[in-house]
Image (cartoon, helix red, strand yellow):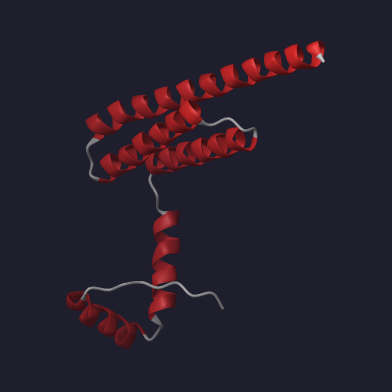
Length: 134
């Protein structure tokens, strides 16, 4: 069975002990139940941002497999950083900041996609030139 280690502050140990005693389950079982419940109860906004983060990661992995890097990867990193800040703002009920950061996340994602596409076109042109010269 795989292991995951959770570090608990000394001040939080009593609540862990009490939870296990009162609820009669292992801490890992209780924690897994909490995580399932928390994921099931994400707000629509949180789900939207999580989907954006997943899409950014897929896009970044895709271009990395193609050998695209540098500026495009950096733009995907920026897009993800903005998206994570959106999620934090939503959870802090700061919807004005979340809205502004959302625009930034989408802008960086679009920039990264355009940069990757430019790289692809340039790469194809270079391949054609090299193959034609050979």
